[in-house]
Length: 107
Image 1 (cartoon, one colour):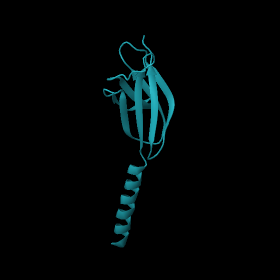
Image 2 (cartoon, rainbow, N blue to C red; image 1 turned 30 degrees about the vertical axis):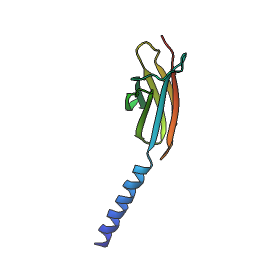
Image 3 (cartoon, rainbow, N blue to C red; image 1 turned 120 degrees about the horizontal axis):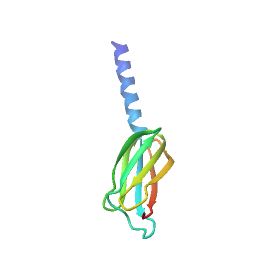
Image 4 (cartoon, helix red, strand yellow; image 1 turned 45 degrees about the vertical axis):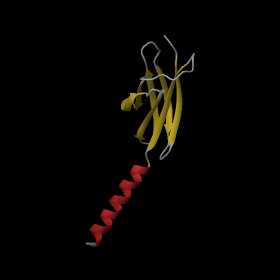
């Protein structure tokens, strides 16, 4: 009985620690010439060639991706009328915020 209790407590503790060891990536997309935020830009987060998340920016050009495991990620941003940008090696830290700014150039 005591063994089952310790196993359950250990499992609960491990699960809780894993939840808190996730990071958050905040992306802001702007026009490289006017510095205006770009809404509805497609943002894709990849790690080792696999897509880990993605969506579109809000009206202020912001997007937040969470939860992400700590490590290096590639950020791909694309929007019609602009050149696609790929930022490689973006480091996401455990239980913290990583903020990056991306500027898109008109094509």
